[in-house]
Amino acid sequence: MAKLKAGNISKGIYVLHNGQPHYVAKTQFVSPGKGSAFTRARLQNLKSGATIDFVFKSHDSVEEIDVESKEMQFLYLGDDEVVFMDPRSFEQVSVPTALLDGKEKFLVPELKVYVQFYQEKPIGVNLPPKVEMVVEQAEEAVAGDRQTAGKKTVTMETGLTVQVPLFIKKGDHLVIDVDSGSYVSRAN
Image (cartoon, helix red, strand yellow):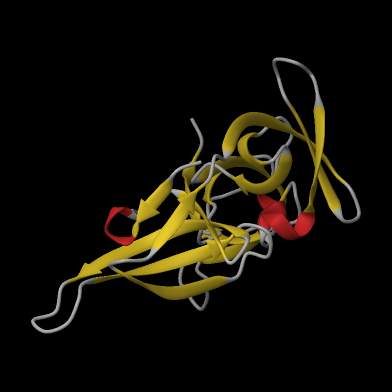
């Protein structure tokens, strides 16, 4: 673990701030005409998920921490935990559902994700930007219905509801954007 000066803090690194592990989501170096330079950083607490904006003065330093990121495969969703498996060692890891920040409806069987570990404890889960899912329930489109502007709501295999074009049917494989929860395209 190395000490970093405020000017060397950059987006994408992990730091220890106030005794808690944080991900640096955004930085801006400011050098005003008068006074000393500083770095404005947006930090995301890896344990609570809370985001804070913090100003580091030029003489401040922060400790960079080692966060291990492992590719894992989704196994199943429990009451308040999600279980992932390392495909190489078959080791299973339970992660609190709260670390997924509401993204658990995008977890389809055998989905590959990256789980972050700090001091051998899971502290975060990164899902891919897009996920392929199967339509579980879809109403039939009514010919000539233009009140819905060419969209209808379908339910995916995980219970996620998505607005899709009228031609989508039950059993179709769709690509869904994880950040917005919106329909992207049909899967190939």
